[in-house]
Image 1 (cartoon, rainbow, N blue to C red):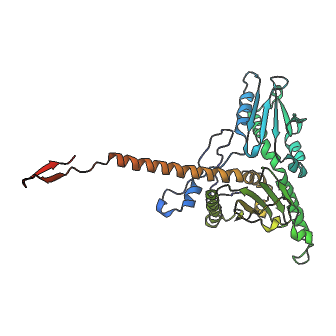
Image 2 (spheres, one colour):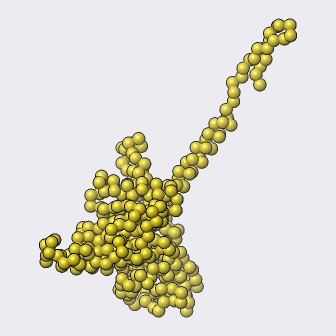
Length: 362
């Protein structure tokens, strides 16, 4: 799946990972020919899917470093908290995760997904957390590739937990698609025409992700809060760029829609708000069958999960960039004023007797 005009790999995360710039536009294009939206898209960063601090700690432990006591609490996007520790011995590392919307995820199969992914490592949850795994450093895979894969799997704990409703939507899509193939569009039962139920994941205090499967698509809707008018302006610029990028270069990208009132898919869904002030925006991604193949599904799920953080990260980064340019321009103007000196003038004056003489200007 490709949700932007660029398809660069990883970027920054709150856990302090490195970032890489997304591939820029051709050098032949001049600045005068590029719109602001194009310039923004060409410099956008893509966020990591994994937690880089967890990845770093486990990489160090797996590399043969002497066993050491660990007790770290790590924050991630969307209020997610990790706790990585050695509660019993230094050779056994416990990793726990706390997710605000874990109860929502469980309704859509999160426990089954996590059991599938972590199997032998799953242990009873640590008090205060939703899910825990335990890694025995004395019983690690022999091959380096297998160790790296295990590290990445542990660092993707949040991603895998959040994947449950998307996987459920994919499965429901294929069932509805198979059922719809038995009927014409007019003869199809109402349940097939309207699609499945809307799965709501309240992953932030005032924001949610809504996922709805249909026989010909999967719709993903993000509700997001804009606290300031400038955020709304920047948000519209970014969303418009997603739309224009799809028209220009990436015809296979999902359809992207933005509106301030709840989409029709959310009619009757509990908790959906419409303030009428523009404070809440709804961003809709329409995933078509070409995005729902088994080969593309993992990347699609990873991309779509990070959209909200990606979106607001670049709104804030753009505001910071513009403010820094304004401060620099103001400093340049002040420097010009300080260097300014009036030209020396010879002023002509007269004495009381009528004689004239010239005085050098100060």
